[in-house]
Length: 382
Image (cartoon, rainbow, N blue to C red; front, side, top):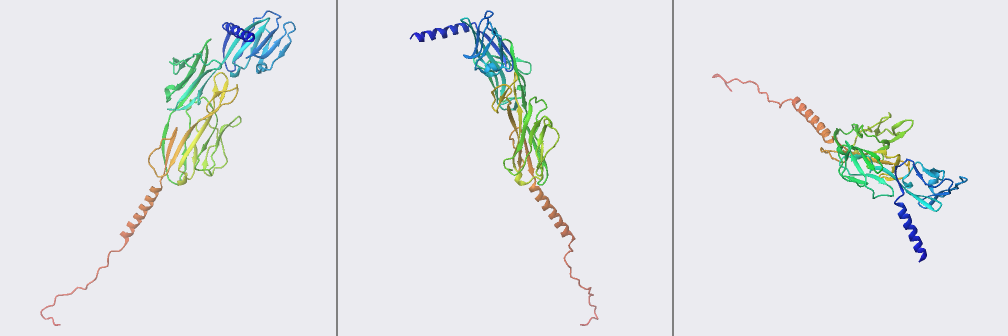
């Protein structure tokens, strides 16, 4: 019973003292400096979430390193603790103890990102996150494009329904202590294109992005599930060649070998009836979380600093055989008409034309030739 009372009062003391603790809101990648307030030459002990970082002897300056991961990027002279290259996992409670006194510091690392990513297809839904790790209840102020108007919601996560070009631009999250972080959205308009091609001809499969996309393209590919035997190129972005197509088989799909920017068209050669189906162009981006951190995966979640995030959008091309309507599938939809019927009609027309010429060249029906006869006169005798 006595032990319970002691623990209760300890937690109560920590709770009361935390009312005066220092609170820091920092971006991913920033540095934070905390002051202990201890007298000079005092022995000090720094902990992160009750795990030892440093134990410093005041008179000699000798340091004992603890098991906390913070020790790998922290420095201290006993009086001050500096933590650089902040990550979201560095959010928490930092405690400095000296001569029986305790001073607490709460650090919240903030990151801003968009789900599924900052490049969005028109009419799709998205989420904007102003993630204050370890403090999800703090309200923030969102400023929306184009002129930084205040958004009516003040939660850390806001949902955008059926995005349009009006939602494109810079979204800013304002946190306490005048901390601001931004994410820029790009909304790609839907495009519908009809392409007519005769069987046996080549046709371009279009795949492009607007010039305003600021996110770095790191990869991508074309694919058609119904053509498993066809080799499609893949997008690579290397230091030497930049963004380029990578592929060797040009028997069915042709592509440029030059450096690419926002257009990723390929050419489908010798279109046949079996080529009818869906062709998908996927473009992958490297999505940077505001504050020099990165989130990873198609549904981003904040990870450690410098972790690469790859997410993508798909541009679909639909090749249809023998139809005349444009089918709206995705971002870019192309209906390719394989004109088999027209070719048959042309062949039939040529045959009929030849037949007509043949009929006109035939001689008319043979007429019987009867010799002229004269009417018998009066002196005529049989």
